[in-house]
Image 1 (cartoon, rainbow, N blue to C red):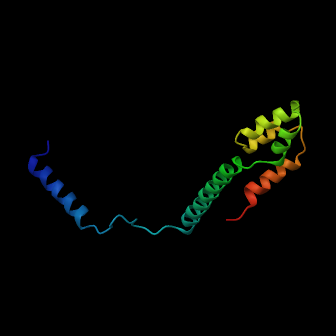
Image 2 (image 1 turned 30 degrees about the horizontal axis):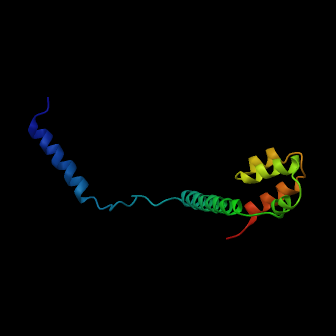
Image 3 (image 1 turned 120 degrees about the horizontal axis):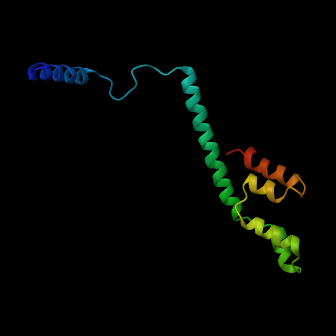
Amino acid sequence: MTSIKNLARTAIILYAICFFTNSDGRPMMKRSVSEMQLMHNLGEHRHTMERQDWLQMKLQDVHTALEDARTQRPRNKDDIVLGEIRSQRLLPEHLRAAMQKKSIDLDKAYMDVLFKTKP
C-alpha cells in the first residue's frame, strides 16, 4: 500500500505541473487546415439554416391573391383544400405532399425562393 507521504508527494507534483503549464485554455496544438475548413463550413451551414427558418416564418404571414379572390366568389372543394394547406407552415415536404397533382412549377418556385436568396 502507498503511504500518505507518497500520496501527498504525488498530489503536490501533479498540482505543480498543472499550475506551471501555461495553456490559458487554448489548445496546445494548432488546428489543421481541414479542421478550420470544417468549422467554416459548419458555420455557413448554421447561418443558412437560420436564414431559411427566418424566411419560412416571414412566408407564413404572406397573403396571396388566391385567398383574397376566394372571399369574393363562392367556395368550392378546391378552394377549401388549398386554404387549409396555406394555413399550415409550408415546408417542402408539406408542399410536395399537398400539391403533387398540381403543377410542379409552384414547387420549383418555392425551392428557388427558399434556397437561392442571398443575404
